[in-house]
Image (cartoon, rainbow, N blue to C red; front, top):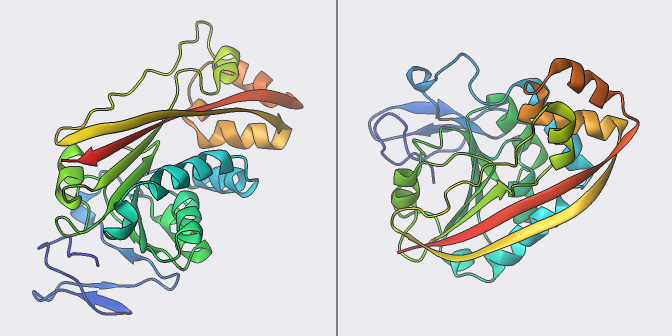
Length: 266
């Protein structure tokens, strides 16, 4: 399934993955494989830090993001992606969405990659039915045209890599925050809050099949509120004094709003 990050040849093996050129990669005890070469790292521990990852895991365990996961699964079920090859979760974090898709599509191979090794370790321990790798979204260790669909949830994706790994008819599901997502947090943290900037949807070589919005209101207690702040850029943005006041609240009503863009490889 995976390809060598050094020479791009196929990898084979079980506990040790090796290519024909002799490059080898040990599978970790948790089941994932590290395919991010040291010379490709931009920092010692790239990706989200352990505190953000742990907070995201706790938030996902509450089930508050299930409406988003359900909407993703519904959209994918109505496409040809499920019969065309594996589904890749690009920037999978601690694996919540990859795990959800694996549960709802048991006949489909689910893959997940993320640069943060601590996130991938958590993902592999929790979701053993998913193949996880530490890897960059800008150098995905997969062969050309080898997946039927790609999903990215609040994660960056390189257009060139999407074009490469998806064959004609392949599906790309991009999930981004809608403009008013978590608006009350922005109001609490910024003197002059602005809506989320809408990201460009169109990708060269893809046609836009649909755009959907998922929205609901979340009643968060103090612990959940703190974790949502910690798992997002709000943890270090905005005014520090305002953030401390926000975290002292006993509860909050939060606006959960997401844009789901479904694109088809031409």
